Image (cartoon, rainbow, N blue to C red; front, side, top):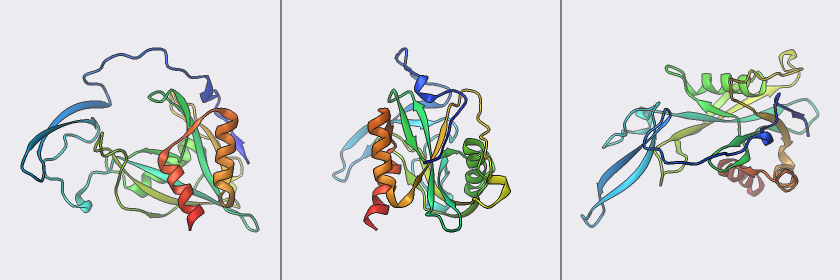
Length: 215
């Protein structure tokens, strides 16, 4: 397993306080009114990203859907070696733990999923990759928020000189560790890391790993 560490370990982070918040810079709350199948009027509380605007009463089709972010399935390829998956570890304040995740990020205005995937991969991990394909729009936690994402598949050629000594370009306040796992043994390796380090895992990554195991 190859590990490239951030300048400061994400394990040094900790939550120091929790308080109420009606609206914030990145997230706001909304109350929805809706009618159930029996005609009863009901309400629902939800969180929205301030970067995507107000939710629509009648969402359009997928082609018209605003995409918030992208999670990147990054496959490292080298002749004669098993494929590896690039993953990250970073402290997530809402759960108070370091979380193992796929590299990910939000789309900038005017960006495509492909552009964001390649850009975010380079910024978070230092790897230069080639966009292969994207999956349909998926919702991260539909009982809580309308935040969504697409999975993007990116291949990284380890024979490319640009990938010889990858170096992340992290933003202020980002403390991300990048590491790689062998795809054939991904679940075993992830379990070992979580048991040893006391971190946890993003559900989407775990579901992806389970899908690989069951295929």
